[in-house]
Image (tube, rainbow, N blue to C red):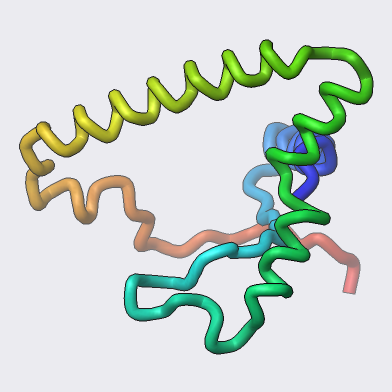
Length: 124
């Protein structure tokens, strides 16, 4: 949930992938909402837990805080970026809603179904 840590880990992974091939990354994230409309996400955790994680670890809030503390952006600049992003998202959602559905052939396009002999990562 730390964008700078993710950035550094991705740099390492990209360098590895370019030289040795595919690499798998595991990301530790926290889901603020349930899995679906029928899962409010509070039957197995409390609202206080969710709120506490959001307050302490929310990646967007952390970046905003860093930008302000390090004086890399003003509150007005951050608000302007947020408004631009919200507009872009709203336009993309409207375009997706008004577009024709993709053909059924897209359901299986670019799905790997063969085998892959991964290079060994240790000398056992």
